[in-house]
Amino acid sequence: MIGPRVIPVLQIDEGGWLVKTRQYRSPRYLGDPINAVKIFNEKQVDELVVVDIAASRSHRDPAYDVLADIASEAFMPVAYGGGLRFVDQARRVVNLGIEKVIVNSALFTAPAAVEKMAAELGSQSVVASIDVRRGADGALVTTSGSGTRDEPETADAAALRAVSMGAGEILVSATDREGLRGGYDLDAIRAVASAVRVPVIALGGADGIDDFADALRAGASAVAAGSQFVFYGRREAVLITYPDPGVVASLVGLSAG
Image (cartoon, rainbow, N blue to C red; front, side, top):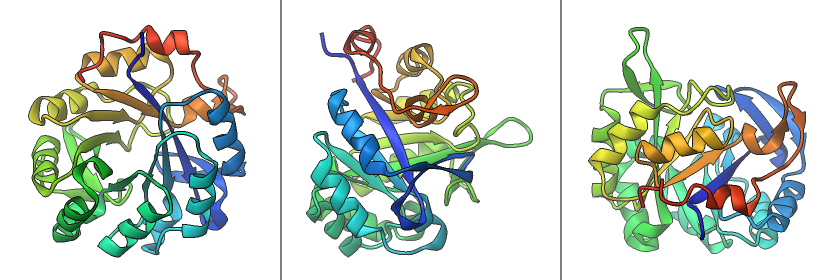
């Protein structure tokens, strides 16, 4: 049986190099992203997410040349996020062969642009990233800009609004857990998954198959991770890897969709 989607997330920085951050800070250089894509091809990965952290940080256009290389090499569907604020940017990314665009800050700063993306590209091609972190009191705080700006909406309200704009999927990203491998924020997943009727992807904190199972039980339809697929062991030696098909298939029945 085919298990739920298990999605590696690759971060690229200035120059298009593959990096990995912790809480979106202190990027560690890992090499050429194309090498990682080739390995994921061999391992028959379901889907791939590529995030340009430099585009998000610098408010610049996506690295279209890098995305073109990734799209031409990847055998699996690719979703891209980073710096997308305008419809023409999203259109150009999709025309390169990228199947989905991921928007975050634009949900709050340019909602009309998100609506136009969904209208032109189709809801199936627009993923809304609802970023969350824990405040000093332990409450969930919705953020944007890789966790640099707090937003007034709750995560479930922001997700509902994103769906009303036309987003066909919601990525729930716990920015304060990113790269730390301490498990997903299950409360955030539950809150969003119970509010919307579109697929929900969990991201931020995964450290193995047990975390995947927990996220799926909490209502996620798919799970995503970064460190889990580029590092090996507690010393985090660089190793591009992916679970065996049997391990992924063991998650059958836990997925929400």
